[in-house]
Image 1 (cartoon, rainbow, N blue to C red):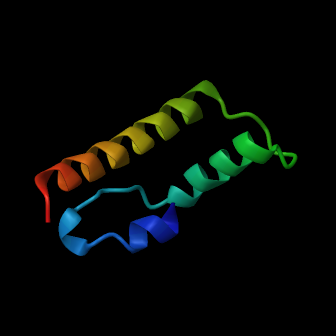
Image 2: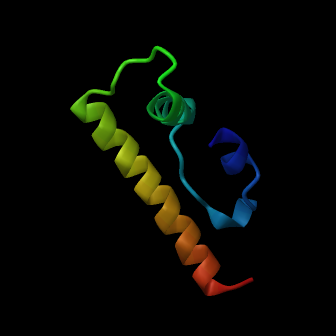
Image 3: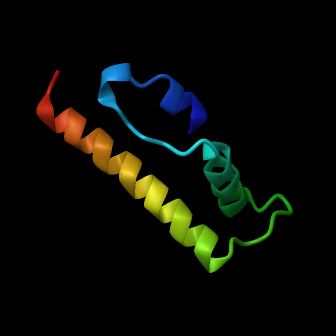
Length: 66
């Protein structure tokens, strides 16, 4: 997620939290397990909100065209 965020065009103005790495770690744990713990309900709500905001911003921008 951090790589994708850092490579978006600056004029897209996609707002992401400073701790975006947390979302990446949650996704890796959900996908592969790797000894991580399940997120709490509040962590899951936060992750869903962040992901939804990012997807909405990118969809809005791509719908607008170049």
